[in-house]
Figure 1 (cartoon, helix red, strand yellow):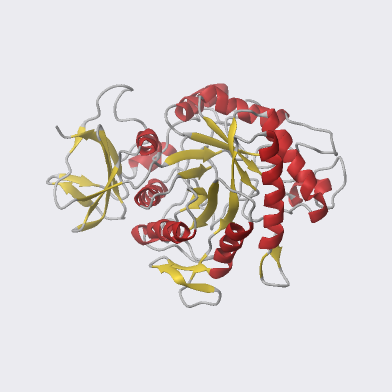
Figure 2 (figure 1 turned 135 degrees about the vertical axis):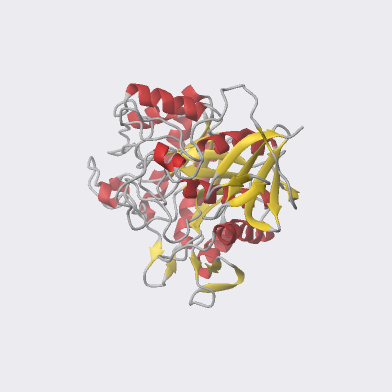
Length: 451
């Protein structure tokens, strides 16, 4: 749901807050509250908490986008700090794109390969010691009607023509052969170029044919690689609006039935799949999103709809919980960090297998990040999401986190593990966590458990 090159998705905020200002404005901080290895100060959780154990292990990761710790355009010290953050439990998985979103055309002419930029991105994952995913998108120009040897980035989101599906499948196979570290691939991205204007719906037949050819080609050369799709955006609409589902709805709105049809067709007609990849935002088209608690329910409601149709593990290839109207959606924003954690809680409660944070380096795409812009001197600093994210990544993957909610304080959210707690205020009001210990608006605290 994000552009291949950074640009604002909502009305742009004129001046981005720095990480320090964002932290100070809420009483939260992007920096760890204790030295690495030191015990965290305990957090008192008093009152009427109810606890739900996560339904299944949840593996979190990141998708690198246009600018992300590339040596060629990063400040050396900022890059080192960013690499340290990334290596410090910021991901189980790192996802890269075959073409675009930070990587160049891998096959400018038929049979002539250029892997240099993807090699560099793969090196980031290798150096930080994490696992590798690859999104098999997008395709060289000559596969979609362009000239051989040329790359028109304005046409990046065009799909390959059907007569070139086999060429794209072959290219996908070449990629997984070149990179044995790739364990999972997602086929294409958000059905880019597969909208059927005449029918007013997605060309799920065409996409599924592309998927099937890629699946066979990848499995032929790397049977061990996990392959997933259909990577469709599960769009939300106003309840009762045209094209809405009558069965998949909640306080967040209703699902666009045309996107659900993509999933149903793909499930019935693919030749094989190892996981189900989808994405969504909690807004309704160009409208503002619902309150954070209501918006987060969308991830659980959609997951349960998917689970009714398939036993495949569910992966959120992208996810965008929107901030309330009038709030800051910059990556430095504590509001953005707080609503992100609300979505993660809903995923954990509903048995989601994995989720990828789009753009871990500071950007202008309207979603949170984990470190400030490493292309700038002084960059590579932690952001409001960073500490809580790093605490949760290994613990959610281990499957031993409980989600806490307080009926009398509905804007409070907590994650509890054996060795610590994360608490989140999902509102613009101060909320009392314990007598004399308030959480300021949108504040996130990470601490130890009381003995």
